[in-house]
Length: 233
Image (cartoon, rainbow, N blue to C red; front, side, top):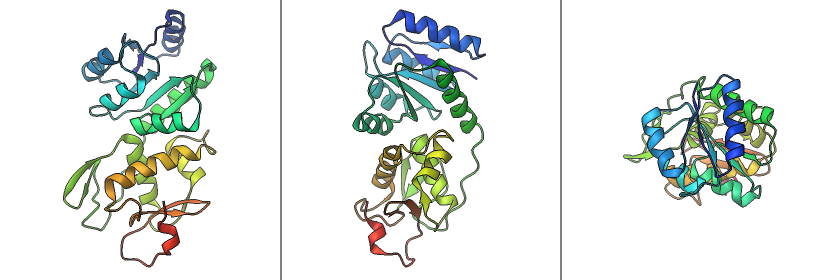
């Protein structure tokens, strides 16, 4: 496995991280900034990207948004920001997980291994019997091809597998982000919002992904009898 680390300006942090990853058995490819990271991602085809939010040219969020056009693997961001809005911005850019600095190296390695394990053991998405939403990594919606980020696709997959059944926030977090998650509900809400914008004709009145108030979400085939209160985003 090859994590691809985009370092910040702190040489000491770079040395420690590189040594830790190499000692853990990973191959490491470094880039000096966001633009070089984008080019190196295309060339090296890494298994995982370890992205620092602070880089000398492009920001981590800008870099992640650009690299998501060609990279579908997990992206973990290292950041000093821990507010709900900062996390939502990171997830919306395509980041899969955020590790807040300062962090323990053992936790970072565990997050990396979990992300790689999940990326390599994904079950196939069940076929959906509707003309509007088809089975594919790029979802077809009303005849138009829609690109889903890896995290968006995995959340949609988790809901489709339980088609018609309500899925709790905690279950979605653990199914998509890993067993160590369960309270970071804003992650799920942010991704659901992005999916609705891409697959729903009217995201404010969704037909596919319905809200179960104070519980979670369900995927519903249009045409079935649904309580209107569950349509609210």
